[in-house]
View 1 (cartoon, rainbow, N blue to C red):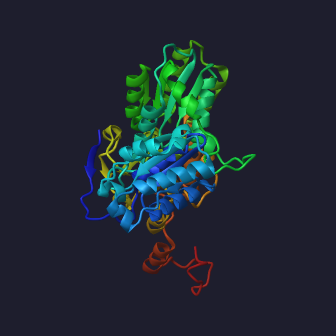
View 2: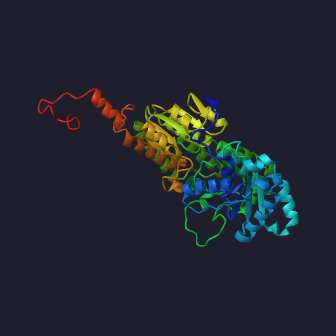
View 3: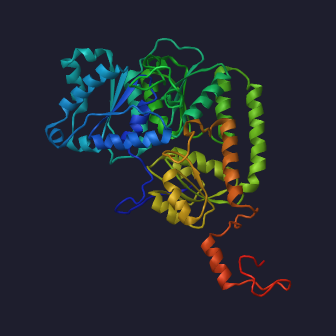
Length: 469
């Protein structure tokens, strides 16, 4: 059991976390023909837009109510109404998802009242679903905003059903799952004859495909009508502790039972998912999945030589930190430093001395002497300073391509993750021992000056240090 502590620094240095409004906007992007809107200044939206574009290398639909000094003081109703009308006219979305920012939350805008008044005054908005979620920047992190948006989608769109649709299951996908992860989960469930309604489904909207036509809204994802039918499913599978609140809301609204999977990365975690799907469908585990499990076992045998005794520093959102940390621990690595962004019940279950809610400066301090760093691309300078390899996880990853298609869930995803990390360790640790890292060039030069090699009897005493043995 880990002790969860919070950094008491006056400011964040090299921040690890991203804001809750950005997490909410990302969740809305998993719904087809949706336009996420940030109720705040243009700068808030531009910052989030650039981050998502750099990570996915795709066009990102994201709008703003463009609040300024005057409208912030007088109230943002006019901006909200005008934004709704302009978006409906130009983009024709099926859903508009509005998330607040620190600016409008501090002012205290009554956005729910604004939306009720706008629908009353502008009947042309009747054909557009509007979902609002409160996500002030100064409360929570990316994962929290994402979770609140999914809960708001359930509250605003799901309808109770009188009958159940056989073999239809809901999958509430956490923010730590990539589009490739969601596709993999859907295939696993499909192998048992189960139809999965995934919310949010970024595997359709942010999977890096070239669309046949251009739209100003999201290009894929779960449809609004499908979200409404989630109340008729026979079970809800919540992936990640962050999805528990949305699963509970779905159960209260439509009496759909749920099960929370704290992770689906790792052998035992994948076994639990496959067993649940088999019990739910009544179908035995297909040979294909049995083969994948056998491949994972072999990968664990091959990879444990590289992981044993390795000290790792991990910085990520809670659910991603838990999934990655548990896999590393199961492979024989030691979690030397764990830094995250926001509180979560799963943090205490990590096999580490403590988990710190902090920033990348904390991770760098706690991770000195480690053998591997795992965090997003903003940790690359830290890895260079510590002369340690960086395994990129989470968001944003802007110095690599193919982020949408990385898979770390199920048997195949776990197998590929083990291969990636083991190859990274083998590249930087050419020998077997955990203390066999090559020293930085500066350290090598210093060692040569302090301990010059003895001249070889077969070489001249004037041989340079670079050529002497």
